[in-house]
Structures are given as C-alpha cells and as structure tokens.
Image 1: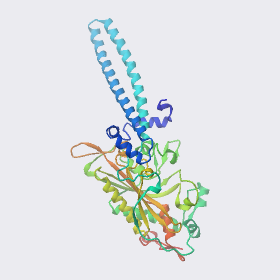
Image 2 (image 1 turned 180 degrees about the horizontal axis):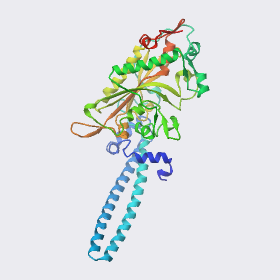
Image 3 (image 1 turned 90 degrees about the vertical axis):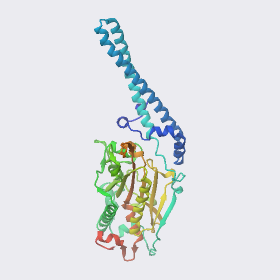
Image 4 (image 1 turned 90 degrees about the horizontal axis):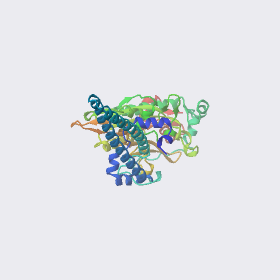
Length: 445
C-alpha cells in the first residue's frame, strides 16, 4: 500500500513541503555499514532494514527522475518537430508526431505521479531513522547504562524531621497543586508568594549568567507551526507528546529550543558569524508527563514548567568543543546554587531521537534520596540543520550544513525541589546566597 493511504493528510502535505533529507542519503549509501552499526548501538533494532529501504527507495527515485527527464526531453524535441513539419506541408507526419507527443505527455504524467508517491515513501522512511550517535556515546539500552563522567559536591545533612518538597510547599504555602487542578488539571501548579518570587529569581539569574557568557537573549513565541516542529525533529517523532491547537494546527512548545533554532530555518550564515549563541526563557508544555506515583510527585514531573534554554549554532569542526563549554556553563550554575550534582553521558538506548550525543545534569535531592534530572545538553550535528536547510558559506564560497546544539540552563521545577529540600532547617528554608539579590529575601519561613 502506498504511503498516502497510510498517513494523515497533514503529514503527507508536510512531507511534500520538505525536500531536504533528514539524513543525507549520500552518507547512508557511502557509509551504510558504519551507520547501521552506530544505530544498533542506540538500540534501533530495525536499523539495517530501514537503511536498506531508504537506499532502495532513493535508487527508485533517481531512476524515475532520470526516466522522467528523458521522457520530457523526448517530448520537447518532438513538439519542436511538429511546427517544422506543418510549415513544410507534411501534415500526416505532423499528426503522427503529435500522437507520439500525446502518448509521451501521458507517460510524463504517470511518471510524475509515481515519483511523487516514491518521494513521500522515502521521506516517511527517513523520518523513522534517528540521528547517528557519536563514537563517544556508550553502548546500552536503558538509563541504568548511562555513564557517570563527573560528580560534584556533598549531600547536605538534613534535620531529623526533614520533609520532601511536596510537604514543604504546603507547610510554607508557596505552591498550590490543588488550585492548579481546579483551574486546569493535574501537572499545572500555581506558584505564589515567595514561591513565585523564587521562580522569577531563578529565571533572571539563569538569564543573566547566560548573557555574561556571551549569549543573546530572545523572547520567542511559545506556539509553533508544523514547519517548526519538523525543522527541529519534534514532528513526527513526538507528535503525541505535544499539546495541539486544533483550528490553527499549531503546537505548544515542549522547549524553547524549537522556536529559537527555527529562527535560522532556510538561513545561510557566513563563517565569520559563528558561533551563534541565543538564550531564551519560556514556559514549556509536555502532554506525556509520565505515570503518577511517588517518583513523580510534586514538582518532579509537570505538564507545564518554566525553563531557560541555551542554543548554539556552530561550525562542524568546533561543535564538540562547544558541547563541552555548554556543559561547563550548566555545571557552573549548579555550583553557584551550591547543589550536589553529577554529569551523565547518555548511552545509545537512552539518547533522544535527534541527538548525536547528550549529557544530562542531575542534582541530588537529599530529602527524597534520589537524583533528579535538571538539564540535558545535546549536539545534534547536522541532523536538525539538514531539515532546516541551515548552512554556512565558507571562505571558498562553498555551502555546508551547520551543527546545532542546545541545553537546559536550567529547567526550574526540580531545581526548586532540590533547593527547598536541601536547604531546609528547623527555622525555614535558606535561599542560596547567589539568589538573594534576585529574591529580596534570604529565607522562606
């Protein structure tokens, strides 16, 4: 069955709109074995089958293109002959050639329709293939196989009557989950009083730190169109995880990465403009907030949360140095907040669909006695840039795809949870010193 009968109309139209390849097919052809091996490392069991299907479809597409061009050329040449024959008075021969051109035009129409179907099938299969992981990504299937590459700080000594943050927020009346349920539903808390001021303080602190590091602040839309979702890879992979605004066919953003990176869709940068560094604060929305239980109580997992995101676009030769620098930036924030943290190099099986390598930062929650993920910093290499048609022109005037990177710097809910739990005393919750100029108070009591 052809792809059109399997896919919703909006997806078919979007696939046809994007003529760039999600993964460069020439690379798939030339490096098939290496790519298949790398994809298997990220637990993509259908790797060889999918890559072979793409290569076969591309071969069929190229054959159809050649056949179509040849047929069109033959038809054009014959059409020119008709006028010459008519002027020469050879009407019978002209009619015979005209009949041939009619037949060729029907063949062109048939080939065009078949090419259209094959292109949809090819794009559909390409959408199924995740990014190829970097060689430094460890093998593994689940988060338990992630590699701890750095750990910093000591766990605080808490009083005997220490409480988890969901009890602390009730005790000090700073976040209201029940009122959020009344207004919207589960996973949409209301921050109030010193809780709201703490949240605002963290946002401003994270933004100021990014500005000091050379990032340019942007305030992007929190609603995106389909083209933006496809550009950074949220569509079609995470279609079910995003809130859909039906009438306009928009989506609420899952992260500021999406609108900020899409600012550069269809853009050709100059090499001298690199790296591009942007930071943005937005609310974020996730439909799939996980199952409800002790491990996702309180602020551990929400449908709406605030986050400051750093995004860089850089030269392919320098992007992994940039990835390290972005990780260092996030680690610096955690150290200034005096939070115990660790850095994980995600294994292949835990890697996001579009990422070539990701480092997660986790803070230690002393009251819960568990690690909480607060940031993911990723290099997508050319995966997003290829969808976005985001390129740069080097000194030789040659155009190459850029590398895109982003990271949470930081996501607020679990940072707030860790601050509340790790800084609780008998007399209240102590605010980290670096935040006091932003909060205007040094304690929640």
